Amino acid sequence: MPEYAPDPATPLWRAAQVFRLLSCIYALGFQIAVNPALDRPAIGWLLFGVLIAWSAACAVAYLNGFGRRPSWVLAEIAVVLALVLSTKLVASDQWALDNQSLPTTLWATNATISAAILLGPIAGMLTGVAVMIASTVVKGVLNYDLVGNATIVIELAVGLAVGMAAQTARRAHAELQQAARLAAAQQERARLSREVHDGAIQVLALVSRRGREIGGATAELAELAGEQERALRRLVSSVDTEPRAGQMTDIGALLRTQASDRVSVSLPAEPVRLDTRTATELYAAASNALDNVSAHAGPGAHAFVLLEDLGDSVTVTVRDDGVGIPDGRLTEAVIEGRIGIAKSIVGRMNWLGGSAKLTTGPESGTEWELTVPRR
Image (cartoon, rainbow, N blue to C red; front, side, top):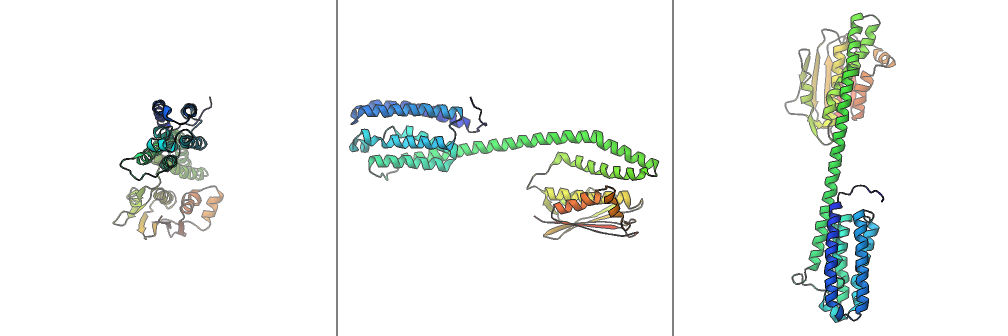
């Protein structure tokens, strides 16, 4: 048997086939009761045989999954309408006017249910309308009495209710799958973060510490290791709080965590809320600038962080009173493979659609102006 993707509406398909069985039993009783009064009773039984054969085929197709496609449902609608219209072949006009059309409105509702489950409430209600139009053609009279003849209301209600139930089941299934994928991804990120923390970060910390102790040429290696250690620590610390699209975060609250005796943070009185992803990346860029102050500005340098809410944009300024960056040093850093400025700061701001402006010079300190647009 071929395999099909799990269908969250499977319980509805199963319930629909139970209804189909009951409607066939009802149609049999109706056929036995009215067949003697038909003009062509033999053809009436032949058409009932078609009803039973088609009902069995639909039950097998829907229960096994291969019939859950538009072409099969359209075929069912066509068969149902044909059987309803065939009433004119076996019964007189007066009989059709006095009785419900063959093969009973209850059995014809199976087409409404199938269309609603597969295609939604609109398709289900339209199918119900088509069944009632065929019944009206058989009778030759349009009945406006919705109180005495509420069949059309029932058909519409069945199409709407079943269709919405199917849509709800599929939506809930999709949300459950998404939650499962997010949980699996979260677990994988947590596992990777543990491995990184237990391996790469500890090695980088050791290289950085030992390189500074040895001094000389290894000090350059220690500086590179220190930069990468800090970058990895920021990545690991945020791995368990992966932001979701649409959430808002106060960038000021993030920046406040950097305050210390050597870092002064100035914030507006009101929270400055940004999309969580934007706030996280902006905070990471500002943190990298502060890391550079600790590593390069000198032992007595102080840093000053200023957050400004400009309405359509947000700016974070990171300034220090350290030794500054000598001319040509940034170009040398890129050539040597140091990506702190090129990637962690400028790259992040470009990715956010913002800008990173650097002002520095020998013995004049360093100032980063990081600006992101409001989305």
